[in-house]
Image (cartoon, rainbow, N blue to C red; front, side, top):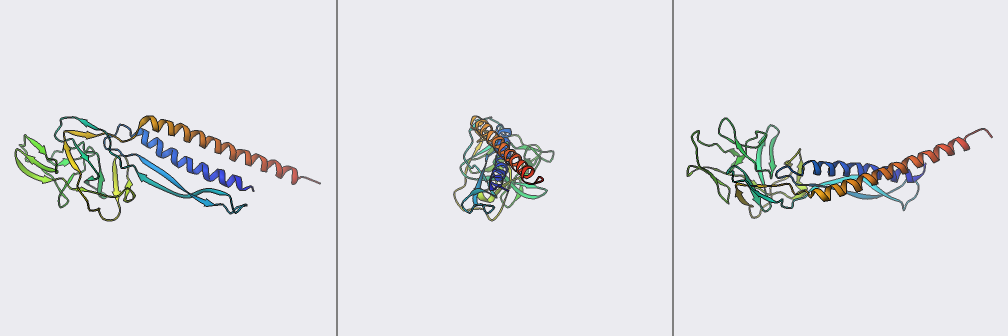
Length: 238
């Protein structure tokens, strides 16, 4: 079998993975705090026929684009955005998770939670709970949370490198290793960070990736047709 079909197949698999990542970015272009995903591939030497032929390796790297999204004023004191490198800490049934999405709210128990109902953690990984009759809620630039002038906690903000984060749907991440030291991000209350996905660039990438994938599939079909015809003609009666 020609080594070309292996190269085309590896390329098609790579483009399929890139297509999924690009489509997911576009689908979350309006999701608060969403950070785009980038996919990179390694080159490997092909050994099927020619030692100098190169193909895309099966190993892929999914990295998070950590660039800042645009900040939108909402004037809701429970909407919080981060300026700088860092994430909020959230407690889920699967353990601690991390997000840039600061569109928080209060649940029935007056706990600060995400839109999905997960408690937002304060320092010491403790939930932040407001008094039942709290009226004036403020969150300072350092993450201190007060209700009617009384402190009720401080947002647990941590920093990870992009390689430590693994997406778990939407704007939520799990993290490997320990948080990195460094300056904490500035907290902006009454503001939301929008997705950092450029929708125009995303659509262009989607079209380009789709066309490349289709071209590679046509190449695979072409190799298959040539080899099928060769098998019929060479393998027939003498």
